[in-house]
Length: 208
Picture 1: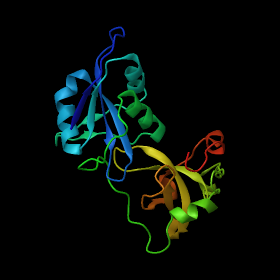
Picture 2: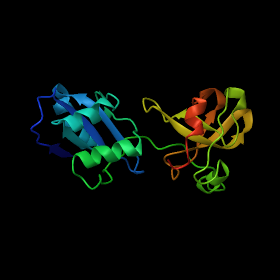
Picture 3: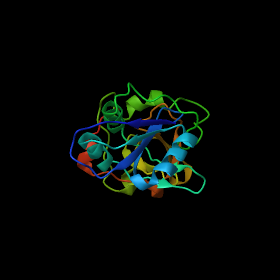
Picture 4: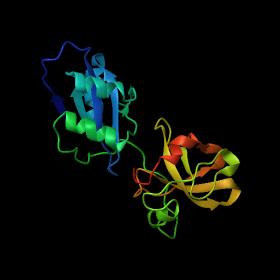
């Protein structure tokens, strides 16, 4: 665990904490906690191989306000969901770190195993092309290969953008996380997917 305390001459800000770090797949996680949860947050950071930042200036306070609220578990660990790469980069820069090393233990759970043949990552270019735009399904029946949708990463992990890579039997799909293309493909039923607003999909570019 690393405890970082930044100094500031800014006006007094309601104290709080940010728990953040990368998991074993290099995926960024971050969430905010109340100052009164410091002891528990530090314990969770130690168990999960993450870092604790004590908020002490306006920039850090602004970053914390945009993060999901974390939750502490009886096991000593904490709910620290995924965050966007750009959000994590701003957080790391704000505390003066070049980046956060791979932790001893992963904060999240691994996705389901990849298919037996064919790498999904290499096929992503056909789902809109490098830097290309994805399809925007208007409703659930319109979901097909090449669409950008929302999928739940797991219990208490949140929803994130994923690309439909393959169709399967029984109205299921294999998907690739848009922001973590090196992760194994995941399988979700049509009813387990969410739709993005057409405008959001229209501006979404692969690898963004």
